[in-house]
Image (cartoon, rainbow, N blue to C red):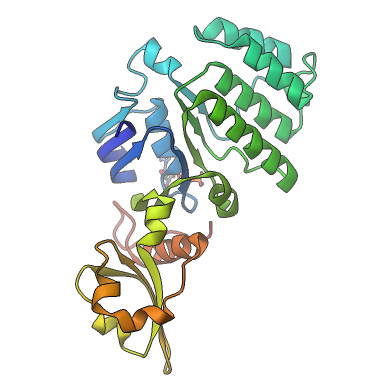
Length: 305
Ligand SMILES: Nc1ncnc2c1ncn2[C@@H]1O[C@H](COP(=O)(O)OP(=O)(O)OP(=O)(O)O)[C@@H](O)[C@H]1O
């Protein structure tokens, strides 16, 4: 398996504040990765480390087998659209394309023009006069026309209405298919991520809570409903992510990576329901609220996505 992104104990501190702690991740090439977590979880920090705009305090990171931003060639392999879809307000759409061509050795002018035409963007219009959705689309065109092997987006759809979001994500998926690139995108909108992502990283309190292919993650999690005290019957190796108890029953969301639950407690499984991705993510975020955030003992993180 070729890893597009590989981090080991990746940590970024700003003074005494830890923005990202001990992140160890392996993302296979070709995945569309959704990065979720509440405000301040460390998502932008991780994406900026991937793009090479900031350096780690400790730990290691390899993107496409090399140190991020290690050379001009490495920079050309990664397309990064930072938060708030940065484009130059005073430049026209056509001027953006000319700038892209000048700055990127692998620039695909045909692809850029084809996308701009498809999107109905007026080449003579200044970026400052485009709508939020059109600016996001222009940023996507610029990032894809350099034909990168990895595309990194920091909350690309945050400011878009539902229709613009859907159009943007459709275009993103078309670009991904065309480039056969790995994509990493952060969002608070789980429904959007669920639609386009096949790999998930959940960050909260500066730490990776869970990461992996969506299918594998879902296969390892169960919602178990049993009698009060069920939690005490769980075998070692089954981790409780969320527990809700009342006098009549106990509802648990558990992680069972070794598959012992169906074997050791088959009676629990008739009541085990398939878990929706959103419920699983919220369970992890709820757990992070009660656990101390990295580098700041006793503090809590917000759980609202
Ligand atoms: N340049 C910086 N200097 C100091 N602290 C920073 C800096 N950049 C980020 N932080 C802090 O690091 C933590 C993680 O920030 P980050 O921007 O990575 O979070 P995020 O998950 O992207 O949040 P949001 O969803 O609000 O964009 C926050 O507590 C933030 O205040």
